[in-house]
Structure formats: structure tokens, C-alpha cells
Length: 120
Image 1 (cartoon, one colour):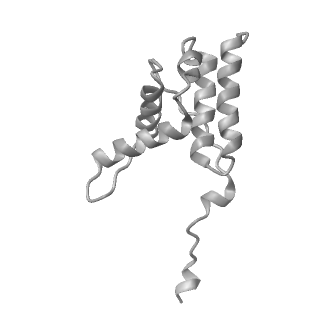
Image 2: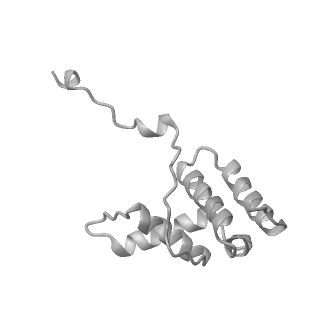
């Protein structure tokens, strides 16, 4: 599918925010997901181009929803639930959510590295 001017503008908007937040794996993952939505969903570009809508604010919305759902200060979303909240925030209608392969930098995946020998 050939990209029109609105699709190109929406992708550029997302990429600019992603470039401004290169070290934020969550913004990168949601940005990748939204770019996929633009490519698959004809109405996604207009929703993303809304000036008050940002990836960062979608994360804030998700945080607010987590606070509502929290039990003993802890809440968790499945990937489907998390991406559904992003779509709801941007007001993008989607029948089926396809979860993108997340490309998380290696340094973000090894926060807790303990060997049994460390305790002996």
C-alpha cells in the first residue's frame, strides 16, 4: 500500500518522538506498534496526527489505568491489554491487535543478573 501525505506525516511525528526518547524502550515499542497501525489501518494516521496525542501521554494514560487496577500497589497488563489502551488513547479502532516483536536494547534486559555462586 502506497503511503499518502497524512500517513507520512503521522509516521514522521512518531519517529520524531521516538528519536527524542531513544533510551526509552516503552516509547520505542509503542512507536513501532503505532507505525504498524498506520500501515494497516486507514484511519490511524488522522488519530495520531491529533496535536494533543503523544506516545508519552499514552504511557501516562496506561499508568493511570494501572493505578485503578492495582492491588496492594501492583498492577500488570497483558501485551494485548496494554496495546488496546494505546489504541483507545489515540482513538484508533482495530478489530485484532497484532503485538509487534519488541526490540529492547540488551542493557535494558539484564537488570537482575545473579548466579548461585554469588550466594555461596
